[in-house]
Structure formats: structure tokens, C-alpha cells
Image (cartoon, rainbow, N blue to C red; front, side):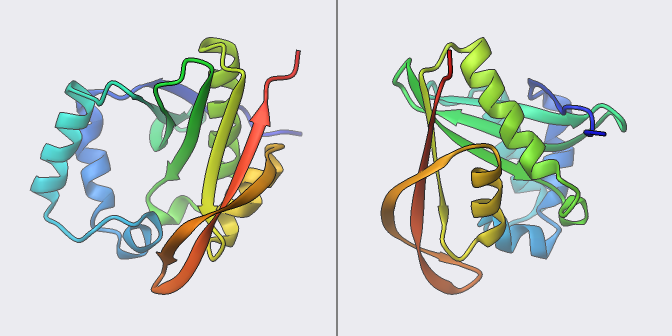
Length: 168
């Protein structure tokens, strides 16, 4: 039996305290690349992101319908109306290894193709971030090349790029 799909919805101002609280999870911050800052500063950041998001960013809350709680967010980023970059975050770290990342990425792709009418979605993950690479492959994305350099958990790495096209 497959777990129920995650629900995507717009981020709400009421989500800002939850997102800010994730900043207190050191393991989450290390993996997500969040820099250490106060919860108040994170709260203010998230309020700004929610109330005045960048024009090129669609950021959706990920809710687990079984629990009715925020478990992450999905980004579809870019100005091209036919193609966007997929990103996803699951938090806090105690929610990892439950299949939520894969389900969030799949929900983001479905939203991109069905709601936005995208033709293509691309993503990239650092080679050292094996969990993200596994998720991108599991949702049908194909590796297309190598990107720039980056660091993951203090390890020098490089980005691996992926792409998927809409199937008609």
C-alpha cells in the first residue's frame, strides 16, 4: 500500500513560527545549508518570504494529511513559463527517513506539470548529498550533467544536475 500523497498549499503567515523553529535543529540546518541565526531573525525572514515572495519563486507548504502539520516546503523557481527548478526541504530532522522527501518531490513535480503546465523541470543536488540524489532519481529525474562546486557537511563536492519532461 502506498502512503497518501502529501498536500501542497500556499505558505501562510502562521507557518513562520514552525519554519523558524526548524532553525533550532542543528542537524537540519547543516543539511539544508541554513546559517545559524536567532529564531526571531528566522521568523522575520519567513514572514517576508511568505508575504512578499520573489516573483520568480513559487514556494508551497508541504503538509502530511495524516497529521495535518507542516513537514516541509517545495520550491518551483525560475522565470521561464515552461521550465522551473525543483527544490524541496523536509523538517525538522526527526521527520527524515520516512519517505517524505520523495513524496514532497513527487508532489512538486505533479504541481509543476498539472497546475503550472510546465514542459520541463530540472533540479540539482550536491554529489555528497546522497539522500537528495536518491530522491531525484526515485521520482524519475534523469541525470544530465555536472554543475558547479559546493560544500555539503563541510565536504567539498559538486552539483549533479537532473531533468524530467512532461509525459503526454
